[in-house]
Length: 175
Image 1 (cartoon, rainbow, N blue to C red):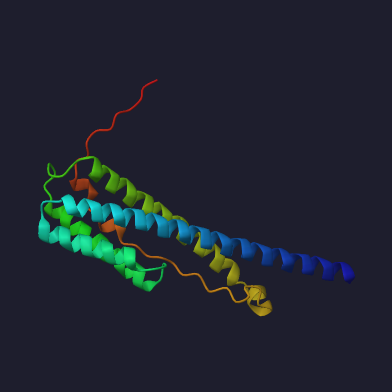
Image 2 (cartoon, helix red, strand yellow):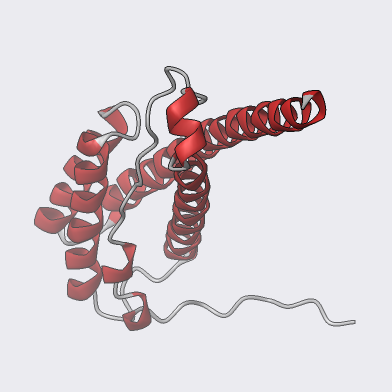
């Protein structure tokens, strides 16, 4: 009987440790996503200053500035980031393929791609944490403690029309 109790106790302790590590991963992924979104928004703000379509560029710049000013990864930040994506999409549709295609456009594409990857990684860690938190034993024993329930971060980066932009060819190293 004591052996069964010891095995169950070890399993509960292991589950609690796993949940703690998952919460730490969620926090680290959230910090990485926040940093990547801020880098992207700062680049968008810098890029919008150089675009010739002033009215659309001002809208993108204002949206990026608002997203930078919004703290954390809550619902307000999600709305602000999606506003940035919609405004940027409008500018990219209005820009002719030969216009404004330079190093900044390539950097903007790369930063947007990195933000998309960071968002996917964050959402994957949130999913893992929610799966463990949803177990009956975890709920019954309160193993999650007072840790807040992690939430997904939804970005609409799929709306960006990158295929319209012809990027300058990159040099490749042969050998």
